[in-house]
Image (cartoon, rainbow, N blue to C red; front, side):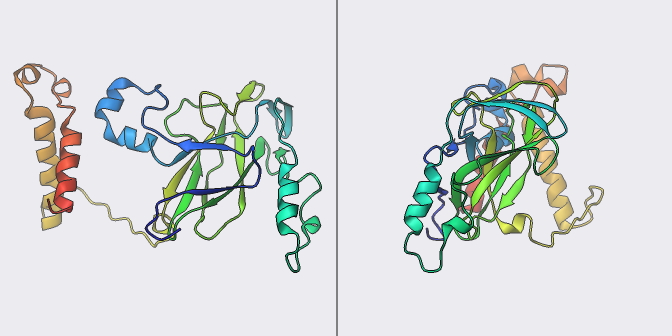
Length: 266
């Protein structure tokens, strides 16, 4: 994987590890149609990265504290144990039995790391190009579930290690069905760079003004954008009394296209 190769490489330690597919803007056809048509920030967020689905089908009820009731409906066997031991055979100084249980990696834990938290092994190692990592989080803009993903940033350009999902349950006694081929993913992987979290970012806040060239540029763009969005529509839009109803919803997409062309020097 070269530095310019924007590829998420998934190394599977188990053939039934998490199902992973590219995220997409329509949320599998469930997103609001008007939002899809006009709201770029909404659709950009939806399509960021990849969706993760669970490795198995399982029904879970959190009874509070560290108490769970669960029924696993599909197998998550020890295929990883056989694969790892086979591939490690003959490696100098390597004894898988010292760190790998006979049944392979732990597949679940129930309230072990924290009250209300289920750990599910993804069965996957993630590899990103140099300078890129992965933000592991709850699925973006899907309806809230009875649990949320404990978020993490995986520096997957160097950390080739298998990853667990930590699901923090929020609603005691509510039955939860987690399905490998279900209607919603259980997590999302979003590409990030270390500068997102590892830099000494500064915060500079002030009342909008026109005291400097930069301040004037920001305010003038704000005014021009509003002129285009609310005052430049056709005769039918201008005839509406409420300015909020007169907006030209295509402004964002036109401006985005124009400004991107300026950056490219077109």
